Image 1 (spheres, one colour):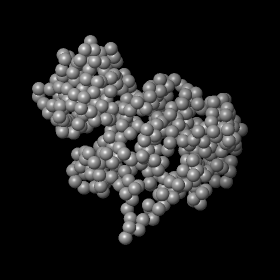
Image 2 (cartoon, helix red, strand yellow):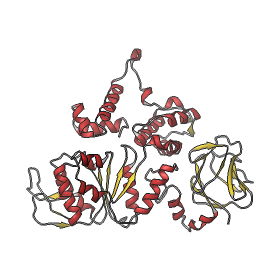
Image 3 (cartoon, rainbow, N blue to C red):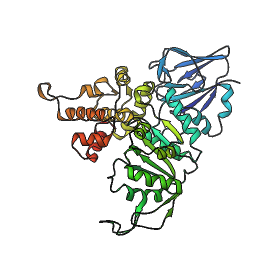
Image 4 (cartoon, rainbow, N blue to C red):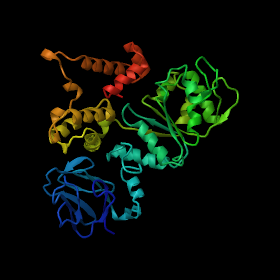
Length: 425
């Protein structure tokens, strides 16, 4: 049984091509065995050769290279699940033994090859690195199960996107996905926000209000920054998870709720338990399954694909014709450490599209922190100083936004605004 190429994205998205014979050429040419409509592909871009029991990709002198799993190659043996990049087209290599995955809608093929997210990459979970394949594999296995999931990882890695993927591909997809940022709600209001309140429960409570648990009933409740939940509220959350009932603030009658919990944090909750800041029994309830999101610096092979994804998004909004990144610009992106992870990358690409000029994104359009603008005579701007100061505070606070805000002497809400502005998560 021959191997197949499944075209995941691009003008020919959804097509499946059997690799018959010992040599199949892929490109825009009329004589190609797999013909692409992608204007960025060469006439003969690459070929796939069968050598014994293995398949090899050979670049045919293409004008903008062929990449396998984000890495440009001249020649490489292909493995099941490898993603091939040609211009704006992504193809996935499936060996003959796995061709049964290709159903009429290709849903299973999509799930098995770097994304289980229906309708392509609408949630921005883009990547074909080994680290992201592991993430997709866990999501695929846990999504159909109605169990609690804890998503961990640094700020800006895309933890909420995991929650969306689990919800959309799970048994509660028809219900609501309700997100709560536990760090952004003042401690004296968190219980009212989660559990609701009765009229007159406190000053300003002029009417009964449903909490997020009630609103999410039948769906999924995403508790972001769960480590920031006050200790006294953790016990009440645990009781709700155990009894599946909430009692509104100021009320006496319990209300049945039926939600799936996905929680997220950028902290080591086991260390928080040891420090007495987080309940161990609550951790056990939340961490039935853990999904660890890798930092962008640990999946740098995904940067070209992510950059092109955001370029495609923002060039239409900016009403600017931008074809691609120059090699120098892409090299600059790949070599950066990305402390703000994907959120920082997204902001950098958006800025480059809006402020750049020309038909391609050039290296000098990519404004990284080290390139921060300086005023007259090399004097650093206030924005540059503020960004570095916030980065230092976040590092000293081990990523704890509450403590960082206290160190900086600003409200937590102000810190959140600045973190988003500077792409620091």
